Image (tube, rainbow, N blue to C red):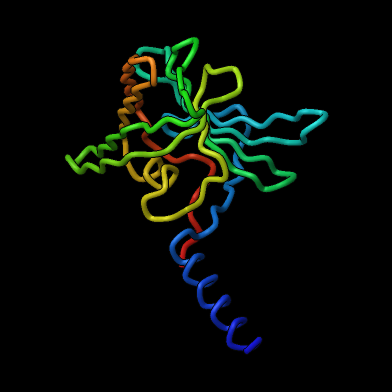
Length: 173
């Protein structure tokens, strides 16, 4: 019975990895642009070393950051739509996205974000590399439109030019 349970857990673990493969970090020259993405490296004395890929919205109000903590391997995405307070009753908010490429290809998705403690940004924690993953789409497309509708009725659309790649990429099979 123990062997059967171990085998079942191992199979489901392998399937989980196939669906959500880990993300690999591409080390780059700090303070440089890679396509539309600005790459940086910084250290916090309490929390360690971070890598960041950042892009600003076309109106220069919104910011999208992909961040990796090198010390613990934790990856997350932070989206600031420019609103000083994002109203979320249960601390979570869905965002609609449209990713576009230069050939007319398009991918639409909906992603669950958590509101930051200060309420000025939205976060996807522990991002993975699955096919529909936000980071995979960021690396695949040239333009992104994000629409957030908060629980107080504020609707904010932001457009980002995202040509190039972030410092994270899915592990290739």
